[in-house]
Image 1 (tube, rainbow, N blue to C red):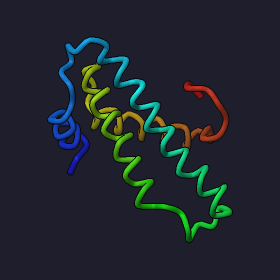
Image 2 (image 1 turned 30 degrees about the horizontal axis):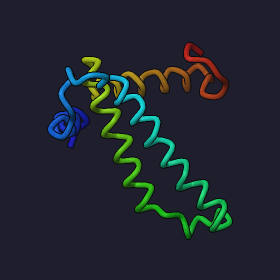
Image 3 (image 1 turned 135 degrees about the vertical axis):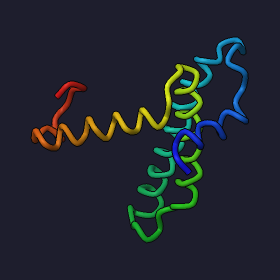
Image 4 (image 1 turned 180 degrees about the vertical axis):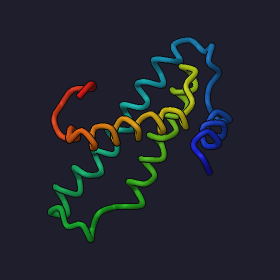
Length: 109
C-alpha cells in the first residue's frame, strides 16, 4: 500500500470537512494520539524498567496507527498528499545528511 492509498482509505472513516471545528478536531486528535504513544512508553519505563523485551509493541503499533490516521486526514484537509509529504521529508533529511546537518535544531538547517 502506498501512502496516498492509505490516505484515501482513511478518508472513508473521516468526518466531513465542513463539520464545525473539524480542523481543530484533527489537530487535537493528532496531539492526543501522539500523547497515547508517549503514555505507552511512560508505562514501559515506570512498570517494566525500560526492558525492551517487555515493550508493548502491539499496543504501540495501534497508537501509531491512530497517529497515522490523523496525519493522513489532516493532510487531506489541508489539500496535501501524504505521498508528497513523505517524499519531501525524505529529500529534506537526505540533504541534511549530505551537508552534515542531521543533528541540531531548526527547520532550515
